[in-house]
Image 1 (cartoon, rainbow, N blue to C red):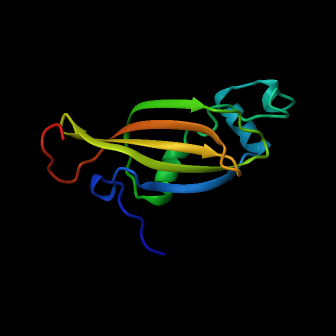
Image 2: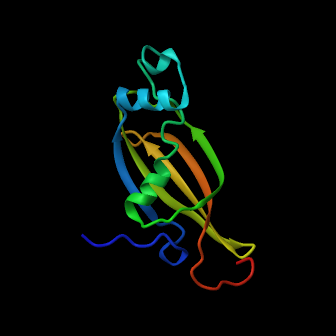
Length: 147
């Protein structure tokens, strides 16, 4: 197995896929998330308008960073901005596909910035959720002022 590349400016480009994976949304995963954040709602364990238990909307909040770490050596990033768009509830028992792509890279105030997107789809390709995550990224070589 080859070593993971460093998560640095020079190893990234706009449009590239950082990583993909499939995740089974189990009741145990939902319960662990609910316990961790103190979210209690009967829809997460029983019937809901979506037809059975659903996952809390923010259940995938750490998955973009986890996909970074599965595919790159990352010391860390400084979080700047996060946005979510929920298209439909994720049902307990669904297998979802997660994909992280680089949407933008730019230099501002002599710092590198990355905008990544996590898209979550079901097995038929229906879009369930998208999130946009902006972070400060280390620059390992000199860049012109403001890009």
